[in-house]
Figure 1 (cartoon, rainbow, N blue to C red):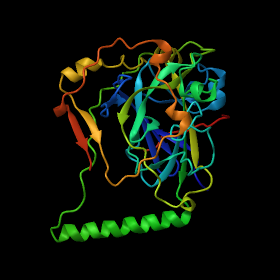
Figure 2: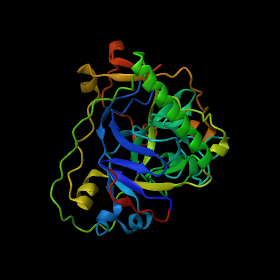
Figure 3: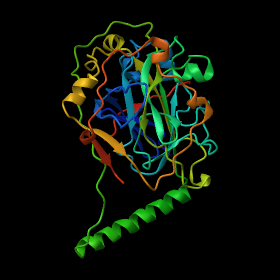
Figure 4: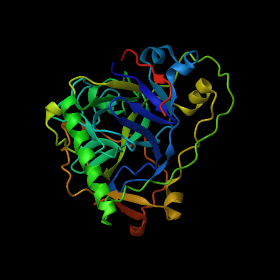
Length: 350
């Protein structure tokens, strides 16, 4: 029997088919210009909705999944490090595909492509918005029209983030595993003969320590401020085109999860835990000389943006200018990159 459960390992989501996803806190970019990749500043804490069934809103219990706390206008990116085998991962923001801009679907499509390929895609910082660029994921409340969902569909119903994974089909997976076995054997032979083998792995960005739990026994919560994702500044990042034939992938998803976004005060009320500290000041980070990143892959084929996502406006157009000062990183601060499961997460009706 195939295990379709999504599980939490620390703050990492493990989806069936080998996909692993972490939500990373980061610096928010200015909404004008195109910038290097901002650094990771630690993981968002992730908790199962089912573990707090008596304090989450009823609608959340019906949808199941997990939740994480996020501040207004806080930025995030999705890390796929630790993915074990090839997988096609769909990423939705308010049930709008972050890659194609089309409505959420339980099928993979190639024209336009509505998924990213793991582990080929190491991370995703935002929606596919331009040739070789994405626009940063930024948290914003529902009801203002500022989310990607609101701008693309005209409604704000779902919010949050949706993930769905498709593994390789049996024949394609068998071929992949045989290729991996042959590569491993070649590596062993090269090591015995003194030859060099392997390549440097992408550098991990500096991580900040997570917040410690603060008490328990939260009061019952009958409603929660709903949060979704809008967009912020533009950065240089490719969304890679799938090079496998479509028939390599399974026809049906192996697993899915709804990720609810909750405000920090509501996080404390629901979980009894202290939320993470407020987002790091951008100018202070840059002044300290800490690194930014520039990832370029000359062998990659970037997906062209689609109409719905090209037209999405940044959250500043909806909720006002960002008054936090911006200090661009110096050239020496931009570093080039490259040329056990816990209890299952309950899925619900969404």
